[in-house]
Amino acid sequence: MQKLPFNTVLIANRGEIAVRIIKTLRDLELRSAIVCHELDAGAPAVSMADMAIAVSGRTPVSAYLDTAQIIAAAREANVGAIHPGYGFLSENAEFARTVVESGFAFVGPTPESIQLMGDKIRARNFVQRNGFPVVPSAIEEDDPATFILRARSIGAPLLVKASAGGGGKGMRIVRDLDTLEQAIAQARSEAQRYFRDGRLYIERYIEKPRHIEVQVLGDSFGNVVHLFERECSVQRRFQKVIEEAPASTLSPGLRERICETAVDIARAANYRNAGTVEFIVDGEEFYFLEMNTRLQVEHPVTEMITGIDIVAEQLYVAAGHELRFSQQDIVSTGHAIEARVYAEAPARDFAPTTGKILVLDYPGGPGLRIDIGISQGQQITTAFDSLLAKVIVHSRTRDGAALKIERAMRGLVLLGCETNASFLARVLADEQFLSGQVHTGYLDENPQLAAGESACDLSTFLAAAALLTRPVREAADAVPELHASLGDWRNA
Ligand code: ADP
Ligand code: ADP
Ligand code: MG
Image (cartoon, rainbow, N blue to C red; front, side, top):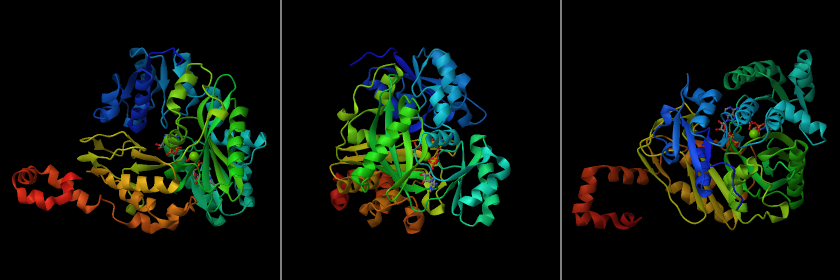
């Protein structure tokens, strides 16, 4: 194995992705440092890291967006590199530039590629100029005076989008052109609020498309490979909920064309490190959506089918090494599915929930991976993103993976904060999901899936409550009859 030129890496992030990154750092015998807001003091990432450095801010999120404090932490921990994870500063070109200018390796692309591909309008123009397919659109800044006119001429339905958008924020569907101006105003105010950037563009809204994306990896020597595609069509509020690899219903020809297009786009952008090229697929047609110039939430499904640790490759590339494999070396085996466990109430339009994690237990086993960023006793607030954990499975077939993940989801016990876990279990057992015939409107078209019970199964709840209550536990220990009546459950 090649030697890395740094001993310690600072993680400028939190939650499950920070834990995920620390695991690879340990594998590579590197030390980890992490920045930490006081709300995260009890988080697993903070206890796992070799060193934690407190950061603060006017709001908890702003602490993790404070470049000066992060650079100061990197100096204090004497790190050689900074990993930004996803969200926060991961797609901020100015941050990447400051990291490099301060003498640290940035575990991600160059500031120039972030600037080009991290901005949706710029990326879209670049991709179109290079001859790749994009959806018909109107970009406001091209000529603000004719923006509405140009949008109207595309014809309904339309999708108003924020240039700085992410996580499904700042988007509005327009089916009736009379409501276009109102939708623009709403999308702009949401974009201002989330991204402090009100720039908008409008695309033709494709009905019932599939979201297919391609994981790419590039190095500083001009090598670019893809790690196949992921299907992320199961979405709520334009944000992914369940992802899988490979995309089961793509024809081999279409899969090849999409993967090759992604590599061509990355190559044209001189792309280095890990990135994702997202497409929407309408029948046999596909269109570039955006490029995410960072590690993606759903990267584990790709790791499962390829056996490649994407975070390790990110570190090698950031250290200036050449990619350690070529396209022919990358093989896809079996099928992987991921489900995102959010602190939210599916029956209340997926509103974020809060609470203290009283009981946390989850299953393990071959081909089962749980990426989790919370621990028992921790308070879940709305200060941060609502993603708590990801359940990921790998199996020989899609049917096998679906069965395995549905069981794993039912085995996840998380009491104290309402989550979408039961909802996920229902989706994973739903006939339409099992048939693979899903599109991005699937969850909206099946509101019954979100409307059902939200807590854990009652039996699990009662069992956990019984275990927690000392008198019940003592009684269980003392009275043989009770043991007998517990039957198999005792050994479960
Ligand atoms: P992915 O694109 O990796 O599939 P998401 O779209 O859910 O995943 O976004 C990744 C994470 O980053 C989410 O936690 C989301 O809230 C956050 N995020 C995305 N874009 C931004 C942004 N511009 N600013 C802050 N957070 C963002
Ligand atoms: P984000 O940065 O929030 O991930 P994207 O541009 O990737 O924004 O879009 C998020 C989701 O919105 C897509 O996965 C897709 O479901 C939907 N979407 C985006 N653009 C279109 C479009 N033109 N037509 C239909 N759906 C779209
Ligand atoms: Mg996207």
